[in-house]
Image 1 (cartoon, rainbow over the protein chains, first blue to last red):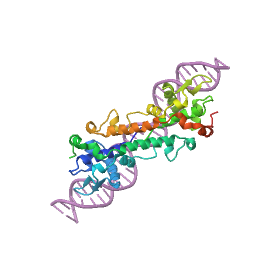
Image 2: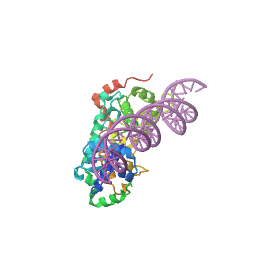
Image 3: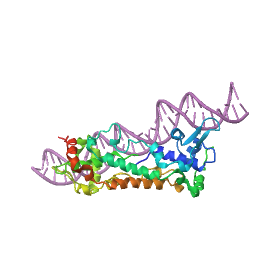
Image 4: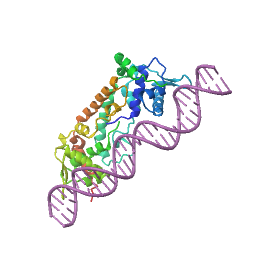
Length: 147
Length: 147
DNA sequence: CTTAAGATGTAAAATAAATACATCTTAAGT
DNA sequence: ACTTAAGATGTATTTATTTTACATCTTAAG
């Protein structure tokens, strides 16, 4: 069972922004803090931008910031947006070749299981990932800012 | 969210064997019926064999058959056995590079979500995938036997 | 001893995901 | 206006993972 780095990174971006909510953040700093590809992160940030999680400002002194408070950002909802829906089993996708699909129940029970997965994530929001007690620790761990 | 073909195929093997429970089955026939790689299937069957789901008999007139009744074969338990456990997010794996892991809650909530996924599958067994009404239909769909 | 089955290990191919590169757009500051 | 530092976008490359193929071995019936 697998979730892409793309989705993983999108969560890390939101955590970063929630932890540094009073500071001016930009993609380069986030990429440096986590030691990941800036270009990949740009595409993720772009999707978060389009999806209304953050505001990206171009130009000098630009950057990104959350536009919703962390307690209004639901994790299940985010992960649903970032992950592709047609990857769970072959029969969920476009060019499914499985011959038994018309009579097979697997698709239904796996769809139900997937929904359980997301429902659990629905119980959490971004602020649960930070909490008052973790904010400072996370801030320290992320403090390797880009120059 | 993604489950490997390896696991998908293992479910298909068990469905095949449950549907054709009175016949003499072999790997070549199953590979031909589903139109998939015989060699890949062999490794899957091998794991199912080791895990006690089926009995593989070598030699002429050999083949494979279920050694447990379909209502005793739990889907959640099977999928847990077939899927790797360290793939959900980067922080589940061996060489995790994520700097915030020591203070990050993501691992816990994703572990809980993963458990919800498997718990749902725990509610089903192989016989639920066949049922009296589907057995004949599935038999038809799989009837393209190898020569 | 032949034949048809599974067992096993390695190599290659295919797929998917992540990263790099190149260029463009935007806006602040001078 | 010009420079600079930010994000936007499209394409190509690299890497990782998964799947498939190939080769050889083992087993047991007839």
